[in-house]
Image (cartoon, rainbow, N blue to C red; front, side, top):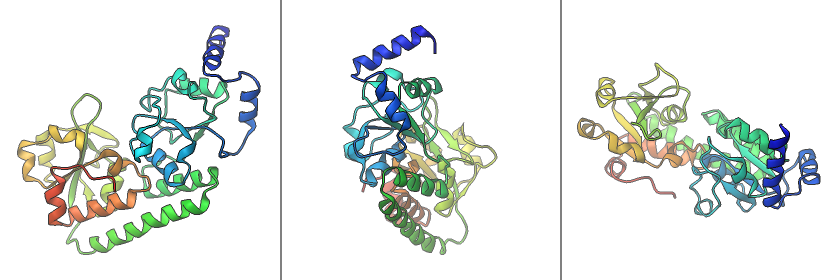
Length: 293
């Protein structure tokens, strides 16, 4: 780090009330996350998991995607997960920042680390096993291994109920998952995404597996795939009306569907019911977001 940058960083730390020497040394060497440690959590599903593990009171700040539970909405924001700034982080005097690989930019994380903030990364794989690994890792760090086991067990019970319903499917329904992307048009989820994993866990077949990640799609492009159903996050619903109105649509909250946190089993079970033709779910899903329950 250049001298000018170091002096600027020390100034930010001083304004935030952070000691600039001993504090950094102590918390680089500390391997645990005690109850007194101040945490910043990045990623809605991760923040929700920390609350579910009983450590929500240790969080002093989070990013704009962390909207559940209600207590998370009251926390100070440090910006969007990919565009964090060093000033917003250090102003909260954190001991550690926890993310799943989505936090950035890397330069901000590097400067935070140099200021003595521990940067901790949990497994971020968009899969059921990734969810389990994240919960177990956080449980170990937060001294909540038994609670972590219960969180995983609760999800597994919902998944078992979903599989029982899927046994009655005549075939896996062809599904398109659509969501908003920045200020542009809606995008479809391909393989290696949480949306793809959700579709498969719910007994469906993602029709867009010829690409990885997310890509813009047109109404005509979606209809050409002849989907049996659409799973849409609320912000993308406005982009896909008209001809797509003939296809059963489930419009839900992004964090509920794709957070892959403690409500993963509930999300899978709900989408499974929708794909199975549950009349109440189909009627309500087109017009309402999924409640946080």
